[in-house]
Image (cartoon, rainbow, N blue to C red; front, side):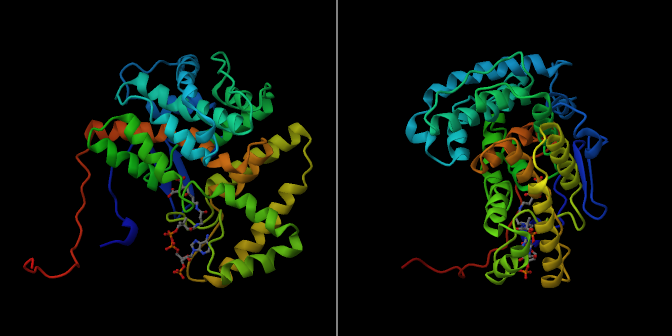
Length: 361
Ligand code: SDX
C-alpha cells in the first residue's frame, strides 16, 4: 500500500503533466511559463475544454460573461449569517445551489460561480451590497470590479489572469482527484466541482496561501525571519508555501507568479519592499528546511508567491482559496469530463486490520 497514494498512477490524461524531477508543468502541450502572463483565463479554459465538450465555442469570453450574469441570481440566497462564514464555505453553499449536469452550459455556470459568489460574499460580509457581473468584461477584470466596486486597470486584470492561468490545472492533485472520483460515479459536474472545492479548502492543499500572509506579517522584518522560522519548525509547524508531494525542485509556478508580482508592481508603482522582504523570508526558509530535512528536498511551491500577488491585488487573505478555485475549476471540469469519456468507476481496495471475525453476543 502507498500512504497517500504517493507514486501511484491512477489515470492517463491529456490535460497536464507535472514533472517533479525537472520542475516542469505542461498544460495541453504548453509550458506553464509560456501561458502565464500571455493568455487570458478564458483561453486557458478553452484549451482545457478542447475535445471534451461537443459544442465548445471558439471564444469563451462572451458565453462566460453570460454565465456570470446567470449565476448572479443565486446571490439572493446569501444572507448575513452565511456571509459571516469562512468565504470558501459561503461560496460552496451558493455553488451547491446549481443543478448537476454534464453539458457545456453547466460547466460554464460552474466556472462563473466562484468568480461571482466570492466577491458577493466579501461585499456582504463587509456590509456592502453585491455588484452584478458585467458580461462585456473579461473574466479577470469582472472579478476585480465585482470585488471592489470600481474598474480594474489592465495591469491588474493581467496579473489576475496570470494567476488564474498558472493554477488552472496541475495533474492529479488532491482536489482534482476528488473531482475525478465523483465524476467516475456519474454524479454530475456540480457534484465533481463541490468535491474538488472541499478538498482544496484544506491547509495542506489550497488553504495554504492565506497563512503565508499571516506568516510574513508575524515575521515582520528580515532579521526576525530565521528565529521565527526556527521556532515554527521546532513546534512541528509546516512552513506554508514550501514543500510538495511531486516537485523535488522549485515549483515552476513560483517564478511565473513572482514575475507577475514584479510586472504588477512596476505598473502600479508599488513599493518593492514587500517583495524584497518576502524573498528574504523565502531564502531563510529554504536554508532552514535544508538544515532540518537534509534528506527531503523542500522548495518553494505555488502558494508563496500566490499570496504576494493576490495581496498586491488587494484581495483579503481569507479569500485566497476561493481565488485558487476560480482558476482550478476549469481543470476540475476538464478532468471530470475526461474521466467520464474513458474512465471506469474509481474504487481502490483497502487491507482490513480490524478485529478478527467474532460472534455477536
Ligand atoms: C498545493 O499536489 C498538488 O499538485 C498541489 C498543488 C496544486 O496545484 O494542486 O500544487 C497546490 O497544494 C501546494 C502545496 C500547498 N501546501 C503547503 O504549502 C503546506 C505546506 N506543505 C506541506 O504540508 C507539504 O509539503 C505538502 C502537504 C505540500 C506535501 O506533503 P507530503 O508530500 O505528504 O510530504 P510529507 O507531509 O510526508 O512531509 C515529508 C517530510 C515530513 O517530515 P517527517 O515527518 O518525515 O520528519 O517533510 C516535512 C514533513 O514534516 N515537510 C515540511 C514541509 N513539507 C514537508 N516541514 C516543514 N514545512 C513544510 N512545508
